[in-house]
Each structure stands twice: as structure tokens, then as C-alpha cells.
Amino acid sequence: MTDHRTESTDPAGHGPGRESVADSIAHALDPLDAHRVSDAAHPTDLKTQVVRFFLTGVLSAIVDYGLLQLFMAFGMHYGPAKALSFVAGTLTAYALNRRWTFNAEPSRARFVATMCLYAVMFGVQWGLFMVLVPWFDGMGWSHFWATTVGYVIAQGVATVTNFVVQRTVIFRVR
Image (cartoon, rainbow, N blue to C red; front, side, top):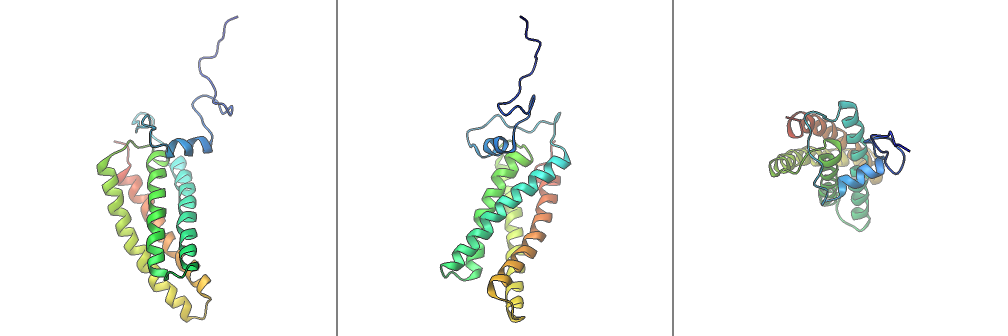
């Protein structure tokens, strides 16, 4: 009997060349997975990049916000707590965005450019957070809501800026 299939499906049955979101994220996180490189002939389309950037952002925000609240629960002031949680969220975002969202090969120049962007965004995000939290506290909000709403506003500004700069400058397919 002759097998007329020319392409196989993945174990989840997603069809040729497709993998589940979980498999895709797992491959993005695998530091030994060197086969993922930018492919100018098959760039990731804008819609896919936006969805992946959003999902990466949600996971990174959970890491960032979760650590922020955890550090503050252990008595750390919200300023240093936000700085440390930002670093953890940033490293999570970089790893996933480079490998999964933008499907880019490892590059020292890209890493440096991304860290420079994140440093600027840290200044914007942390500065906005440090202005908003005391302002909301002064309005009589509970500290939990002041830090939460301050976080959401600061994160929103940084997220939009990060996507535009990463897509158009850092991870553009050449």
C-alpha cells in the first residue's frame, strides 16, 4: 500500500507545520532550540505577532505584578518592589518575544537594543507608577487599588510603545 501523505501532522493533530500554543511556548523557552531563525520568505504576520505579543504580555505581567504584590506583602516599599518585579517581567517578555512572537535568531545586538528599549521603558513605567501611586493614595484609595491601577496605566503605556519599537526596529525581518 502506498502512503500518499507528503506532510505529517504534529502529535496534537494540528496539521502540517502547525503546533499547539503550549508546544510553541515550550519551544520558545528552550535555550537549546537553535533551529528557530528569522525567515524573510516566511515572516510572522502582523495578526499572529499581535496575538503572541498580547499572550506574552499577559504572562509577563502576571510575573511582574505577582512579584510586585509578593514583595510588598513581605514589607518592601513599592518603589524597589516595582523595580525588581519589572526586571523579572522584562526577562520573561524578552525570551518569549524574541523566540515566539518575532521568531528571531539569537543576536547580541538585538539583546542590547531590547535592553536599551526596556531601560527607557523602565524609566517611563516606573516614573509613571511612582507618580500615580501617591496621587491615588492621596485621593483616599486603598494602597492595593492605588498600586494596581497605577501598575495597569504604566504597563499599558509601556506595552504599546514596546510592541511598536520591537516590531518596526528590533525584530523586523530584513
